[in-house]
Image 1 (cartoon, helix red, strand yellow):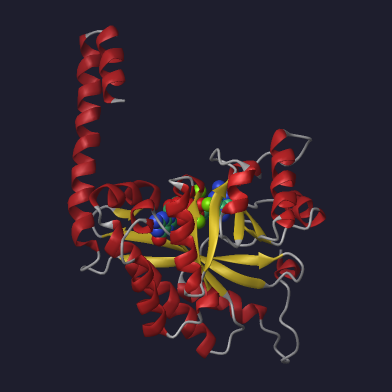
Image 2: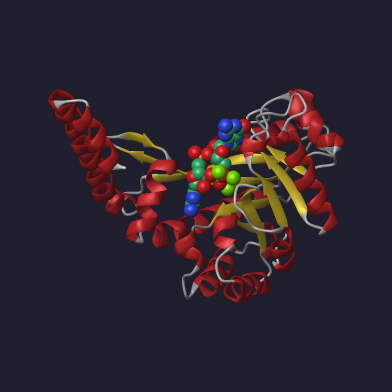
Length: 299
Ligand code: C2E
Ligand code: MG
Ligand code: MG
Ligand code: MG
């Protein structure tokens, strides 16, 4: 990429050359800064988790949440996970950071149960580097034991590209993870190139339809076709299916018509701090103690 920029800059003359070099230097120096600060972020307690509610499309109730990491860097402000997760991956820092995420997510889920809210699952994203870690299963088991979370309530999200590594390895790792009672979801499903026959062989529980397929659900688009196909595939394989990036009522209606199990997206809520998520749980609770209210009532 840098080479292309350099080539283009050269083509366009000297001034552009300098301009691009300057821009490139800035990018590299930002990356160096980020990496340096990432190394101490855990010990300085700069990470927090936000929770995005997942909605059961039959009942309209919150069925769980996805835990998403946020980095509040004192000098740089909020840094997006899209920016720092790749650096954490490359440097290996993702291993302790990912462990922190899992522990924090489990801990918080138990706190909400103890506070009397209905049982919900919690999903956490697992990076490629974490997936291949030798003592991953033992570490997760330890976290479950320490926090007291029912393993059934924890779901790990791995991307299709992780799942597409060497088959025997992936299957045995997934079996080991499911052996301790937790669940597995394939995140951003549909963006990779795994074949249906391959997906069939994987011991997984959930397919998460990538949000790129939701954006164009209005008029008969390819995306609509793909979304319908993924839902049908999930039903066929008896997998749970959840759509991410649901932003409009039209998308919601489309998903409900096709009997998609769950949905997650800005239509319902953006990812929320623990305090705000709890406020949502509170709002859902029926004041007279009957059935919980449906979030569809407050859309
Ligand atoms: P992801 O796991 O696919 O998470 C979904 C992303 O979509 C989140 O971005 C979420 O805020 C965003 N999103 C939710 N609803 C909508 C919507 O209606 N419309 C649109 N356009 N976007 C929506 P976020 O939080 O910035 O995270 C980005 C990615 O960073 C995640 O994608 C995941 O791959 C990674 N990530 C986040 N937290 C962690 C973590 O704790 N560990 C690892 N390994 N990766 C993480
Ligand atoms: Mg995810
Ligand atoms: Mg996703
Ligand atoms: Mg994604």
